Image 1: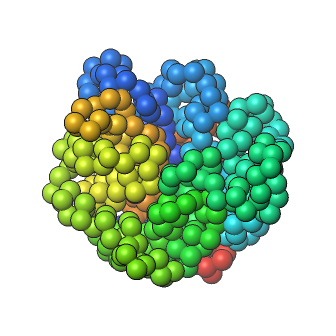
Image 2: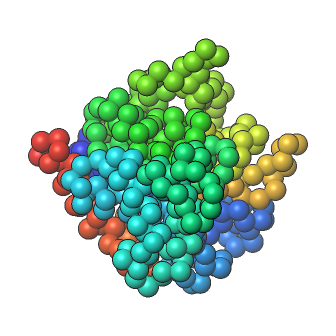
Length: 375
Protein backbone atom coordinates (compact mmCIF):
# COMPACT_ATOMS: atom_id res chain seq x y z
CA UNK A 1 0.00 0.00 0.00
CA UNK A 2 1.27 3.45 -0.90
CA UNK A 3 2.42 5.51 2.09
CA UNK A 4 -0.26 8.02 3.05
CA UNK A 5 0.65 11.68 2.68
CA UNK A 6 0.45 14.13 5.57
CA UNK A 7 -2.70 15.72 4.14
CA UNK A 8 -4.27 12.30 3.66
CA UNK A 9 -3.62 11.45 7.31
CA UNK A 10 -5.11 14.76 8.46
CA UNK A 11 -8.21 14.14 6.35
CA UNK A 12 -8.35 10.54 7.47
CA UNK A 13 -8.36 11.50 11.14
CA UNK A 14 -11.12 14.09 10.87
CA UNK A 15 -13.30 12.07 8.51
CA UNK A 16 -12.93 8.83 10.49
CA UNK A 17 -13.83 10.72 13.68
CA UNK A 18 -17.02 11.95 12.02
CA UNK A 19 -17.74 8.49 10.60
CA UNK A 20 -17.35 6.85 14.00
CA UNK A 21 -19.69 9.40 15.55
CA UNK A 22 -22.32 8.74 12.88
CA UNK A 23 -21.93 4.97 13.24
CA UNK A 24 -22.64 4.91 16.95
CA UNK A 25 -25.09 7.82 17.21
CA UNK A 26 -28.33 5.90 16.48
CA UNK A 27 -27.59 3.36 19.22
CA UNK A 28 -25.72 5.12 22.04
CA UNK A 29 -27.25 4.13 25.39
CA UNK A 30 -29.88 2.11 23.50
CA UNK A 31 -31.45 -1.06 24.97
CA UNK A 32 -29.44 -4.23 24.64
CA UNK A 33 -31.63 -5.53 21.79
CA UNK A 34 -31.79 -2.26 19.82
CA UNK A 35 -29.35 -3.21 17.06
CA UNK A 36 -30.82 -6.67 16.59
CA UNK A 37 -34.37 -5.28 16.34
CA UNK A 38 -33.37 -2.82 13.60
CA UNK A 39 -30.80 -4.84 11.68
CA UNK A 40 -31.60 -8.49 12.37
CA UNK A 41 -28.12 -9.03 13.79
CA UNK A 42 -26.50 -8.34 17.15
CA UNK A 43 -23.33 -6.91 15.58
CA UNK A 44 -23.69 -3.32 14.37
CA UNK A 45 -22.06 -3.30 10.93
CA UNK A 46 -23.29 -0.22 9.07
CA UNK A 47 -24.68 3.30 9.17
CA UNK A 48 -28.34 3.66 10.09
CA UNK A 49 -30.73 6.62 10.33
CA UNK A 50 -31.10 8.36 13.66
CA UNK A 51 -34.60 7.66 15.03
CA UNK A 52 -34.39 9.09 18.53
CA UNK A 53 -35.60 12.41 19.87
CA UNK A 54 -33.50 15.45 19.09
CA UNK A 55 -31.49 16.88 21.97
CA UNK A 56 -28.62 19.25 22.79
CA UNK A 57 -25.95 16.54 22.88
CA UNK A 58 -27.41 14.33 20.18
CA UNK A 59 -28.76 15.04 16.73
CA UNK A 60 -30.57 18.38 16.38
CA UNK A 61 -33.45 17.17 14.22
CA UNK A 62 -36.03 14.41 14.70
CA UNK A 63 -35.22 12.78 11.36
CA UNK A 64 -31.62 13.03 10.15
CA UNK A 65 -29.94 11.63 7.04
CA UNK A 66 -27.74 8.58 7.43
CA UNK A 67 -24.27 9.79 8.38
CA UNK A 68 -25.31 12.71 10.58
CA UNK A 69 -23.21 13.10 13.71
CA UNK A 70 -23.82 14.44 17.20
CA UNK A 71 -22.03 16.87 19.50
CA UNK A 72 -18.77 14.98 18.83
CA UNK A 73 -18.45 16.10 15.21
CA UNK A 74 -19.73 19.57 16.10
CA UNK A 75 -17.00 19.98 18.72
CA UNK A 76 -14.30 18.96 16.28
CA UNK A 77 -15.64 21.29 13.60
CA UNK A 78 -15.63 24.21 16.07
CA UNK A 79 -12.09 23.42 17.24
CA UNK A 80 -10.73 23.32 13.70
CA UNK A 81 -12.46 26.58 12.84
CA UNK A 82 -10.94 28.25 15.91
CA UNK A 83 -7.46 27.02 14.98
CA UNK A 84 -7.90 28.30 11.41
CA UNK A 85 -9.12 31.65 12.72
CA UNK A 86 -6.11 32.00 15.06
CA UNK A 87 -3.70 30.47 12.54
CA UNK A 88 -2.25 28.29 15.31
CA UNK A 89 -3.09 25.97 18.19
CA UNK A 90 -5.57 27.63 20.58
CA UNK A 91 -4.43 27.91 24.20
CA UNK A 92 -6.65 27.20 27.18
CA UNK A 93 -7.92 30.74 27.70
CA UNK A 94 -8.87 31.07 24.03
CA UNK A 95 -10.71 27.77 24.10
CA UNK A 96 -12.52 28.75 27.31
CA UNK A 97 -13.57 32.05 25.78
CA UNK A 98 -14.82 30.37 22.61
CA UNK A 99 -16.87 27.81 24.56
CA UNK A 100 -18.36 30.66 26.59
CA UNK A 101 -19.04 32.71 23.44
CA UNK A 102 -20.98 29.84 21.89
CA UNK A 103 -23.09 29.51 25.03
CA UNK A 104 -23.80 33.24 25.19
CA UNK A 105 -24.23 33.86 21.44
CA UNK A 106 -25.40 30.52 19.98
CA UNK A 107 -26.93 32.14 16.91
CA UNK A 108 -23.52 33.42 15.79
CA UNK A 109 -22.31 29.83 15.39
CA UNK A 110 -25.45 27.81 14.55
CA UNK A 111 -28.18 30.30 13.53
CA UNK A 112 -31.03 27.83 13.20
CA UNK A 113 -30.67 25.87 16.44
CA UNK A 114 -30.04 28.43 19.17
CA UNK A 115 -31.91 26.67 21.98
CA UNK A 116 -30.18 23.35 21.31
CA UNK A 117 -26.79 25.03 21.00
CA UNK A 118 -27.22 26.73 24.36
CA UNK A 119 -28.29 23.40 25.84
CA UNK A 120 -25.13 21.71 24.55
CA UNK A 121 -22.77 24.41 25.76
CA UNK A 122 -24.31 25.36 29.11
CA UNK A 123 -22.23 22.68 30.82
CA UNK A 124 -19.08 24.58 29.82
CA UNK A 125 -20.23 27.90 31.25
CA UNK A 126 -19.08 27.40 34.85
CA UNK A 127 -15.70 25.83 34.11
CA UNK A 128 -14.94 28.38 31.39
CA UNK A 129 -15.78 31.38 33.56
CA UNK A 130 -13.81 29.95 36.46
CA UNK A 131 -10.76 29.35 34.30
CA UNK A 132 -11.04 32.93 33.03
CA UNK A 133 -11.23 34.22 36.61
CA UNK A 134 -14.90 35.17 36.42
CA UNK A 135 -17.88 34.33 38.61
CA UNK A 136 -20.97 32.72 37.10
CA UNK A 137 -24.57 33.95 37.36
CA UNK A 138 -25.63 30.30 37.20
CA UNK A 139 -23.66 29.48 40.37
CA UNK A 140 -24.08 32.47 42.71
CA UNK A 141 -21.61 32.61 45.54
CA UNK A 142 -19.23 30.03 44.03
CA UNK A 143 -15.77 31.61 43.64
CA UNK A 144 -13.99 31.45 40.29
CA UNK A 145 -11.26 29.24 41.76
CA UNK A 146 -13.87 26.62 42.66
CA UNK A 147 -15.61 26.86 39.29
CA UNK A 148 -12.27 26.25 37.61
CA UNK A 149 -11.98 22.84 39.28
CA UNK A 150 -15.23 21.58 37.76
CA UNK A 151 -15.16 18.80 35.19
CA UNK A 152 -18.01 20.22 33.09
CA UNK A 153 -20.36 19.72 36.02
CA UNK A 154 -19.12 16.27 37.06
CA UNK A 155 -16.72 15.34 39.85
CA UNK A 156 -14.90 12.52 38.08
CA UNK A 157 -12.75 12.19 34.93
CA UNK A 158 -14.74 12.26 31.68
CA UNK A 159 -14.13 12.12 27.93
CA UNK A 160 -14.67 15.89 27.61
CA UNK A 161 -11.15 16.62 26.37
CA UNK A 162 -11.15 13.68 23.97
CA UNK A 163 -14.36 15.03 22.43
CA UNK A 164 -13.58 18.75 22.33
CA UNK A 165 -9.93 18.35 21.30
CA UNK A 166 -9.74 15.26 19.05
CA UNK A 167 -7.59 17.01 16.43
CA UNK A 168 -4.93 18.73 18.53
CA UNK A 169 -2.26 16.23 17.57
CA UNK A 170 -2.77 17.00 13.89
CA UNK A 171 -1.31 20.46 14.46
CA UNK A 172 2.02 18.94 15.57
CA UNK A 173 3.02 16.31 12.99
CA UNK A 174 6.03 14.32 14.13
CA UNK A 175 6.35 16.14 17.48
CA UNK A 176 4.42 14.05 20.04
CA UNK A 177 5.84 15.87 23.07
CA UNK A 178 4.69 19.26 21.76
CA UNK A 179 1.26 17.78 20.98
CA UNK A 180 1.05 16.29 24.47
CA UNK A 181 1.92 19.58 26.15
CA UNK A 182 -0.45 21.63 23.99
CA UNK A 183 -3.39 19.29 24.57
CA UNK A 184 -2.75 19.08 28.29
CA UNK A 185 -2.68 22.87 28.61
CA UNK A 186 -5.80 23.39 26.49
CA UNK A 187 -7.88 20.80 28.36
CA UNK A 188 -8.47 23.16 31.29
CA UNK A 189 -11.79 21.45 32.10
CA UNK A 190 -10.35 17.93 32.44
CA UNK A 191 -9.58 16.58 35.89
CA UNK A 192 -7.42 13.68 37.03
CA UNK A 193 -6.26 11.26 34.37
CA UNK A 194 -8.74 12.75 31.87
CA UNK A 195 -6.13 15.38 31.10
CA UNK A 196 -3.54 12.65 30.57
CA UNK A 197 -5.91 10.88 28.16
CA UNK A 198 -6.44 14.04 26.12
CA UNK A 199 -2.69 14.60 25.92
CA UNK A 200 -1.96 10.98 24.99
CA UNK A 201 -4.44 11.01 22.10
CA UNK A 202 -2.80 14.15 20.74
CA UNK A 203 0.69 12.65 21.08
CA UNK A 204 -0.42 9.44 19.35
CA UNK A 205 -1.90 11.40 16.45
CA UNK A 206 1.31 13.37 16.11
CA UNK A 207 3.36 10.18 15.94
CA UNK A 208 0.92 8.66 13.44
CA UNK A 209 1.27 11.65 11.12
CA UNK A 210 5.00 10.94 10.98
CA UNK A 211 4.22 7.51 9.52
CA UNK A 212 5.17 5.42 12.54
CA UNK A 213 3.75 1.90 12.76
CA UNK A 214 0.59 1.54 14.89
CA UNK A 215 2.29 -0.50 17.63
CA UNK A 216 5.06 2.09 17.85
CA UNK A 217 2.47 4.88 17.95
CA UNK A 218 0.64 3.25 20.85
CA UNK A 219 3.48 2.00 23.03
CA UNK A 220 5.88 4.92 22.55
CA UNK A 221 3.05 7.30 23.35
CA UNK A 222 2.02 5.41 26.49
CA UNK A 223 5.62 5.53 27.70
CA UNK A 224 5.66 9.34 27.52
CA UNK A 225 5.58 11.54 30.61
CA UNK A 226 6.86 14.95 29.49
CA UNK A 227 5.06 16.79 32.30
CA UNK A 228 6.26 14.40 35.03
CA UNK A 229 2.84 13.18 36.08
CA UNK A 230 4.37 10.18 37.79
CA UNK A 231 4.20 10.81 41.50
CA UNK A 232 5.03 9.33 44.87
CA UNK A 233 2.47 6.55 44.51
CA UNK A 234 3.22 5.71 40.87
CA UNK A 235 1.50 6.56 37.60
CA UNK A 236 0.74 8.25 35.30
CA UNK A 237 -2.50 6.29 35.57
CA UNK A 238 -3.14 5.53 31.89
CA UNK A 239 0.49 5.08 30.92
CA UNK A 240 0.86 2.57 33.73
CA UNK A 241 -2.41 0.63 33.38
CA UNK A 242 -3.21 0.53 29.67
CA UNK A 243 -0.23 -1.55 28.45
CA UNK A 244 -1.37 -4.39 30.75
CA UNK A 245 -4.86 -4.36 29.25
CA UNK A 246 -3.51 -4.23 25.70
CA UNK A 247 -1.35 -7.26 26.44
CA UNK A 248 -4.46 -9.17 27.52
CA UNK A 249 -6.30 -8.04 24.38
CA UNK A 250 -3.50 -9.10 22.01
CA UNK A 251 -4.63 -11.53 19.32
CA UNK A 252 -8.32 -10.77 19.71
CA UNK A 253 -10.20 -9.20 16.80
CA UNK A 254 -13.71 -8.17 15.82
CA UNK A 255 -16.53 -9.38 18.03
CA UNK A 256 -14.18 -11.25 20.34
CA UNK A 257 -12.21 -8.06 21.00
CA UNK A 258 -15.34 -5.95 21.48
CA UNK A 259 -16.76 -8.43 23.99
CA UNK A 260 -13.47 -8.65 25.85
CA UNK A 261 -13.20 -4.87 26.15
CA UNK A 262 -16.80 -4.47 27.27
CA UNK A 263 -16.19 -6.95 30.05
CA UNK A 264 -12.69 -5.82 31.06
CA UNK A 265 -13.72 -2.15 31.23
CA UNK A 266 -17.15 -2.60 32.83
CA UNK A 267 -16.00 -1.17 36.17
CA UNK A 268 -15.31 2.22 34.57
CA UNK A 269 -18.01 4.81 33.91
CA UNK A 270 -19.38 4.86 30.36
CA UNK A 271 -17.95 8.41 30.18
CA UNK A 272 -14.50 7.40 31.41
CA UNK A 273 -11.52 8.61 29.32
CA UNK A 274 -9.39 5.57 30.17
CA UNK A 275 -12.14 3.35 28.84
CA UNK A 276 -12.42 5.35 25.61
CA UNK A 277 -8.67 5.51 24.97
CA UNK A 278 -8.26 1.81 25.76
CA UNK A 279 -10.90 0.92 23.16
CA UNK A 280 -9.24 3.16 20.57
CA UNK A 281 -5.76 1.73 21.13
CA UNK A 282 -6.91 -1.91 21.22
CA UNK A 283 -9.00 -1.46 18.06
CA UNK A 284 -6.08 0.19 16.27
CA UNK A 285 -3.63 -2.58 17.19
CA UNK A 286 -6.08 -5.30 16.14
CA UNK A 287 -7.25 -3.70 12.88
CA UNK A 288 -4.51 -1.31 11.79
CA UNK A 289 -5.08 -2.34 8.16
CA UNK A 290 -8.87 -1.89 8.26
CA UNK A 291 -10.14 1.28 9.97
CA UNK A 292 -13.78 0.37 9.34
CA UNK A 293 -13.38 -2.81 11.41
CA UNK A 294 -11.70 -0.79 14.15
CA UNK A 295 -14.72 1.54 14.24
CA UNK A 296 -17.07 -1.44 14.44
CA UNK A 297 -15.18 -2.80 17.45
CA UNK A 298 -15.59 0.56 19.19
CA UNK A 299 -19.28 0.88 18.29
CA UNK A 300 -20.23 -2.62 19.48
CA UNK A 301 -19.48 -1.85 23.08
CA UNK A 302 -21.81 -2.54 25.99
CA UNK A 303 -22.46 -1.07 29.40
CA UNK A 304 -22.27 -4.20 31.58
CA UNK A 305 -23.22 -4.70 35.20
CA UNK A 306 -20.84 -6.09 37.80
CA UNK A 307 -21.79 -9.65 36.85
CA UNK A 308 -20.90 -9.02 33.21
CA UNK A 309 -24.47 -8.84 31.87
CA UNK A 310 -25.28 -6.28 29.17
CA UNK A 311 -27.59 -3.53 30.44
CA UNK A 312 -27.52 -1.30 27.36
CA UNK A 313 -25.15 0.01 24.72
CA UNK A 314 -22.50 2.37 26.07
CA UNK A 315 -21.42 5.80 24.76
CA UNK A 316 -20.50 4.16 21.49
CA UNK A 317 -20.58 7.19 19.20
CA UNK A 318 -17.88 8.76 21.38
CA UNK A 319 -15.78 5.59 21.49
CA UNK A 320 -15.99 5.13 17.74
CA UNK A 321 -15.28 8.80 17.05
CA UNK A 322 -12.18 8.80 19.26
CA UNK A 323 -11.04 5.56 17.64
CA UNK A 324 -11.51 7.17 14.23
CA UNK A 325 -9.47 10.21 15.20
CA UNK A 326 -6.56 7.91 16.01
CA UNK A 327 -6.75 5.24 13.32
CA UNK A 328 -7.52 7.78 10.57
CA UNK A 329 -4.25 9.55 11.37
CA UNK A 330 -2.45 6.23 10.96
CA UNK A 331 -4.15 5.07 7.75
CA UNK A 332 -5.10 8.21 5.88
CA UNK A 333 -8.32 8.94 4.04
CA UNK A 334 -7.89 6.65 1.02
CA UNK A 335 -8.69 3.47 2.94
CA UNK A 336 -11.91 4.82 4.44
CA UNK A 337 -15.22 3.58 2.91
CA UNK A 338 -15.79 6.29 0.28
CA UNK A 339 -19.56 5.89 0.04
CA UNK A 340 -19.93 6.23 3.81
CA UNK A 341 -17.70 9.30 3.95
CA UNK A 342 -19.86 10.99 1.32
CA UNK A 343 -22.93 10.30 3.47
CA UNK A 344 -21.22 11.68 6.57
CA UNK A 345 -20.19 14.92 4.91
CA UNK A 346 -23.63 15.40 3.37
CA UNK A 347 -25.55 14.51 6.52
CA UNK A 348 -23.69 17.03 8.64
CA UNK A 349 -24.01 19.67 5.94
CA UNK A 350 -27.77 19.24 5.71
CA UNK A 351 -28.43 19.20 9.45
CA UNK A 352 -25.78 21.60 10.81
CA UNK A 353 -25.03 23.74 7.75
CA UNK A 354 -21.27 23.24 7.82
CA UNK A 355 -19.17 21.75 5.06
CA UNK A 356 -16.77 19.36 6.75
CA UNK A 357 -14.70 19.02 3.58
CA UNK A 358 -14.19 22.78 3.39
CA UNK A 359 -13.18 22.99 7.06
CA UNK A 360 -10.76 20.09 6.68
CA UNK A 361 -9.17 21.68 3.62
CA UNK A 362 -8.53 24.98 5.40
CA UNK A 363 -7.36 23.18 8.55
CA UNK A 364 -4.97 21.01 6.52
CA UNK A 365 -3.61 24.03 4.67
CA UNK A 366 -2.91 25.68 8.02
CA UNK A 367 -0.95 22.64 9.19
CA UNK A 368 1.02 22.46 5.96
CA UNK A 369 1.84 26.18 6.32
CA UNK A 370 2.89 25.84 9.98
CA UNK A 371 5.11 22.87 9.23
CA UNK A 372 6.48 24.17 5.94
CA UNK A 373 5.34 21.02 4.19
CA UNK A 374 4.32 20.83 0.54
CA UNK A 375 2.64 17.45 1.04
